[in-house]
Image (tube, rainbow, N blue to C red; front, top):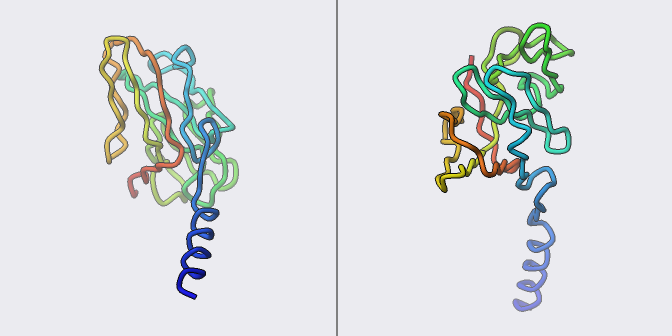
Length: 155
């Protein structure tokens, strides 16, 4: 009886444990370094990964979860106002995902990102989700883990 329960438990866990493939939401996305916007330039979006990649005015890269922290709407990047604007309830976020105004309780969430530079060094987003400074270094590859969300700062 114990052996049967053990096998059934192992089978349930094996099927229930999420196994995300690379390139699907919940897994790791390889982002083309050629798509990185210039500092202060327009934001690049990846709908299949549900994220935006932004390069701040200080030349630092940040990957933002493309979902509003208020009620889960999808705030697009608005070029005219140079910010994210939620179409549902009017929350507004800066290029780096920081809160500007509206009913959202916090800044936009971020994904853990690892940037490998051509000189062989690499940097990974820290626990605070701060943007990764590029400092004029050439990027070899970018890996965005959509399974690891860093909560945005509370207002």
